[in-house]
Image 1 (cartoon, one colour):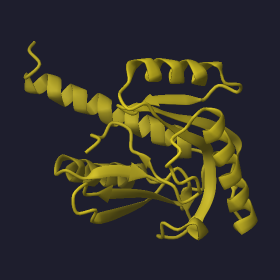
Image 2 (spheres, one colour):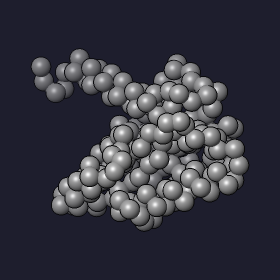
Image 3 (cartoon, one colour):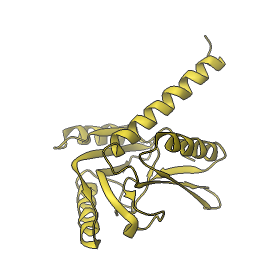
Image 4 (cartoon, one colour):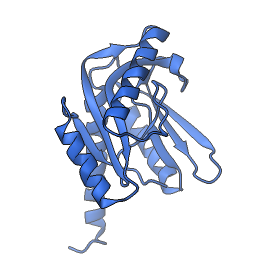
Length: 193
C-alpha cells in the first residue's frame, strides 16, 4: 500500500488518537473525573487563543475536545494542554487543583548533539522520567506522581513551582519556560506551528 492510501491515513489517525488518549489517560486516569482538562489553542501570528475545556473523566467529551483541537491545529493553531487539572474553567494558578506529574521541557534547537546529550541526561536521571516525548526540537518529560498531589492552597502551588524550578535547572530544561501550576505543554501528536 502506498503512503497516500486513505486506508493507511485512517489507520495512522486512529493510532495517533489512541496514543494521545493513552497519554492523557496515563496522566489523568486516577484524577477526580469532574476536574477540568484545559486545552489552549494559540495562533502563532495573531496570538489569539481559543481555550477548550472538558471534564477529564469523560472519554467521549475528551475525544470530542481533542477533535476540536486537531481542527484548530490543522488551521495553524498551536495546541497546548495544562498538566495540572483545574477545579474551574480558568487557566490561572489559583484554579489548578491537581498535579498528576512533574514535567520538563528541554529545548535543543534542532541540534542532534544537544538532543542526544539531553536524552542521555534524562535516561541517567534518578528517578527516571515515566514518560519521554520527542517534542520535535527537544524533549518533553513527565514524572508520574503516586499519590497525585492535590493543590489545596497557594503554599502547595508555590511548593510545586519550586520543585519544577529545581527539576528544570537540574536537567537543563528550557530557561524561558514559565514554571508554575498554570503552565502549559504542547499536546502530544500535534504540529508545532
